[in-house]
Length: 253
Image 1 (tube, rainbow, N blue to C red):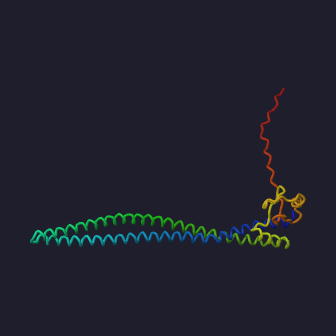
Image 2: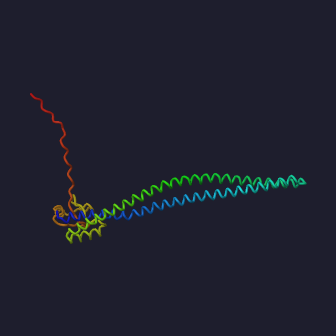
Image 3: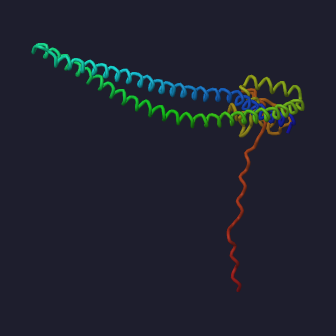
């Protein structure tokens, strides 16, 4: 096989790995930013739940103060009612007391609603706080793993790029130029396997004589349809299973 065919095959593997490492190195910081943003949104939700609980407690105290004020006013009216001179005055005080009692009942109903809401807010805040603590721990673990993975990827990238430089320098300049041009034109895939009379990438049938030349591998040839550099790779023949049958001895006469 022409030595440059092995080189371009290795170059394609190296370039594929360089692409994978580069994409992962680029992706990991964005991934970390995404999980941090998600965590921050959960923090804001917890803060909103806590703020709602505080507002609820503040409103409940205000309602309780209103009840107290109404009760004081009602006690004052009862005192006045006992000092009333006429039935009309008595009924007027009684009517106003009944009106205040209705208002107090409404305030007390609202206080009960606030208490139910407060319990819900408190439960939500407690659950969110527990979940946030767990999520924070997971995020820190994931950030640490992402940092370690990035370091490993960068270290491997240096090794792979160094190997690529060695292989590229060993290849004939014309072959290297061809490889780079086809790789750019064909989405990074410059080398294709030829098998069963076809280019396995574009699936076009190769001329018989041309296919035989590819099989011999003495030249750097390109697919007449897609332009990719071709190399022949035969399918491995399945190995014959060993004969495990039991040989029985012939009976002696």
